[in-house]
Image (tube, rainbow, N blue to C red; front, side):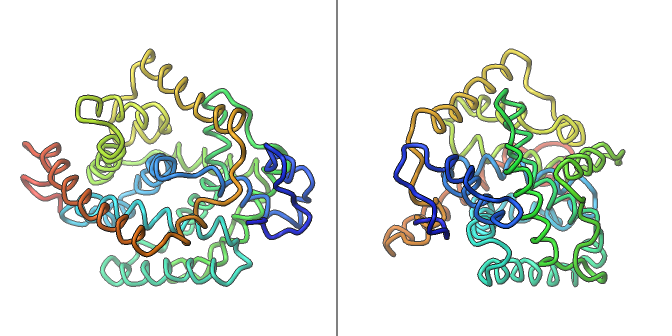
Length: 330
């Protein structure tokens, strides 16, 4: 797909960075964000992004209560389905952009989901700062991750585009009882500052948040690593997650040697993708949306089977004195 701009050529080996260089981030920010975020994805990359993203949003008790509920909720009982649906929403937003009605419709479905949950858990979706954190975190995630890996962060154009894109996403989301999201930072540096302030806000230990984190971390390892190497799979989130998040969950970070190996591997994956391989011509979201019906059905069947096996696995992993399945966390 030629990315919504007739002036963009996909003829060169590394056409994405060249295309971004030709665009104006003040007006073409949706296109720049799509080019930055939509082409280098895969199921593995999406699950890793989810693993490094969603746990940060449940550290406050009011966030964890809605997700964990009394028995683990979907992070236990439909874990893979939850990842895939969450990332499908994300990819739709990234691909279409906030000016497109399809993006707006996808955001409205999230509002409806939140409204339904708010009837069961009143007040949990009334915290404007949680929404601002979700928006700003989304804007800076890959920039901060790249720096963590020893790579270059976003270019100035990408930083401006990231800020503007998520600024425009804010009005699409409804804060319970307060209208749309307010107080989004003025620039990209402000997004980073907001994230760091939010992440370093002292909070009481939250057992439900810990179990959510463990469930999500374990899913990544379970899904992509064989039984004998799941400890190695767990080292990915224990290395790449924010130190504040690991501390909030009381999860020990990977030891320095193992962390160095993980960083080397992920950095190498980035470099191979960006330097050695040609840029993809079709976004991952578009490939999924145009799969033949038989392939779509196969993916759904695989998700259901994996959900069942993972549910049994994680319940056994978390079973024991004081665990949520021997005595439910109420």
